[in-house]
Length: 259
Image (spheres, helix red, strand yellow):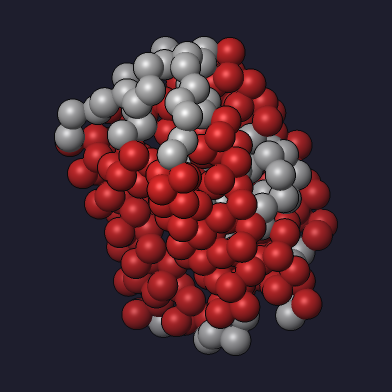
């Protein structure tokens, strides 16, 4: 794959980061497996490296300007990701590549169903867009634990975790689609995947050269995606991406089974 192709891939991933408030790994990992012909472990470790810099900063700026970020909830999510990610990374490293492919595919399919169910329900906004709510200790603990579980899953499959966090913030805590996306981007600013990345790095599952080439395009695409998100219907955004995730997951499981 040429450098130009890698840059175009990174821009596409970045747009999805900003448009849907996800970490990008959900697209990066299968793209590196099928387009760059990476081993599953190498794709996941390199994906975590790409997610270490604040690639979602440009997209977060767009959501922040429109009052679609809950800062307190985002901080709890970041802390949960940091703790859970290490456990997930340690679990993934000794697994056979084929098993990891199946787990990743199932993860995508479940995430797609979660997101589809969320968009089929009435979208409520808690609190009103532009406001910050005082989190009760119980609610704060719930957000932290939920993010910790998302972090374990993220470390296990080498992604940012926003793909799970966005629908769960909506389903469990009443966030609107745009507000859940903006809040999830808070967890992409600090290096919350650092501990998970180190687990892959120690095992030799990181391609730094390709990772460095992908980072600028993902960052630039994130800014563009954040601008696009303001002009699109949140329900339709969720439905389209849910379908894409389910198809990608099904293909991943099928290809692993086929060998």
